[in-house]
Image 1 (tube, rainbow, N blue to C red):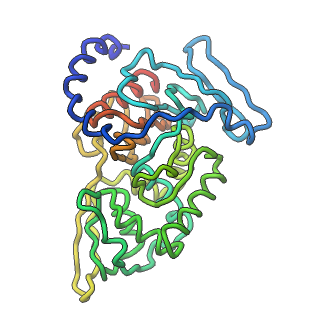
Image 2: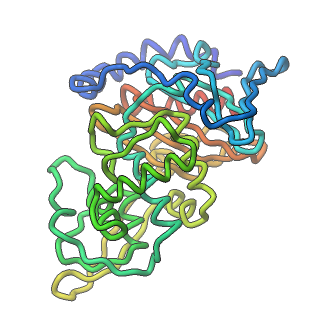
Image 3: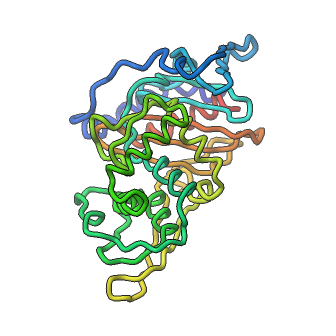
Length: 332
């Protein structure tokens, strides 16, 4: 693998490039929590683990796709030190191709919105119209928003684009309020859905991923949630959209056009796609507590469906460089 020859020479450069953002992200970062080892066997009656003698890759399989052991694989061949957790999952072969702290409790930041979108796409009428309330627009100045205004009348479909492209926290609140009447009630729906999917080490308290000690997930749980969402074509359409022009009305009935752009650096061209891969889409997330996060759906050179996840990277540059490393090195 050619990329492995470059790792040692790149490490020093990347440490220097990211030293500033490390300080910025982790001054108020969360402490490392013990992983949830052996937590999935409550759901599995027949589990097995197979290590291929040809590739060394670890394959987890069971009737319900549960995993009982926390095994790191491939981390000594990548710059794994730049992130707290990562994984590569082949949806077609049902193999875990790369694993780094799969069951460690981590903050998901805006990758939370994957679950928010999944619930809405699966259950709601996307043509319903919603009136934006004051709670939704009351966001901190540094919050990622879709720039909605109180009194705007907008479709659920457009709110989903506002949720997933610019990562609008205002859109997240409106979707939660529309579906459940409040954010707290919607969080209960999210938690119930997580349990249904087997994501037993995930807990939500909001729909947008803003920091809370009781709002967390794991890399493996995110794989379960994201994989379920990918079964909905509307969800795939959302995450693969590079930009969207939403047309709706303001409180006075005037037409408003709002243009939203995807935050995924592969889709925007900010970062090169690994050779032979097709990036379909995904979701980014960033907070001081969560670091830099990316959940990604792609096709490898053989056309196989790949889910790859990096959580708590120390800066945006390293987030994408590690993602490209684990795809190029382990998903082909």
